Image 1 (cartoon, rainbow, N blue to C red):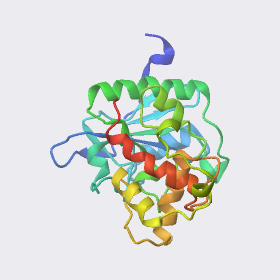
Image 2 (spheres, rainbow, N blue to C red):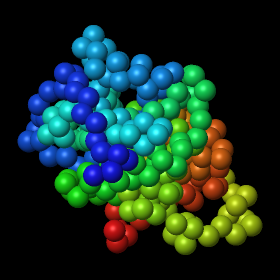
Image 3 (tube, rainbow, N blue to C red):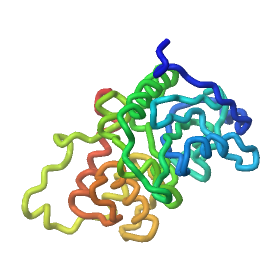
Image 4 (tube, helix red, strand yellow):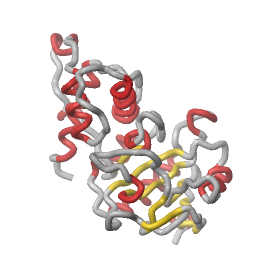
Length: 248
């Protein structure tokens, strides 16, 4: 086995049994948000921190395994997706080495993403994870978290068969009048809720709606993350409904 494909065992004691039968049908991606890889590994293995993940992918492509996939890692925290509040029991958690927005957020290098793709493909072979349930931490906890952030290459992962990306052909075609029209907030809220986000259909751009919209934009419209429901955001949100029906 080549060095780049080798998994380094780095055990953490921060885990427990999966609840509710142990079915895994989500993959949640994070960034470490710490200054160094060593600091992140120490924290993920520190019982006092009470946080962990199944894997850490370093910038140089090394993959560290902190626990078996059968165990429940403590990575999602207070979270929600498609009616599920115990995301940890239903998911595999992967941390990507990156200092994050607090310490100098940067692009994810090629070796790191290539290693992530190899790792994720193996996980998807072992668990029945639908492509619309490959998620970011900001998707499952939009009021608390913004990782893996707007620099994460979600579209590339989707091209590699990991996760979902709404193609241009599935987005609603907007003519001049539609582009200038005021988006229907309730329709966007319904589309985001149908995809899995925790959001109420209020018809108002309240604080939670803005946070959820920002999480959606961070993933699907990363060039501008402002939490506003504009025509482009509305069209992209509507396209999410294809995730459950388009062929894999």
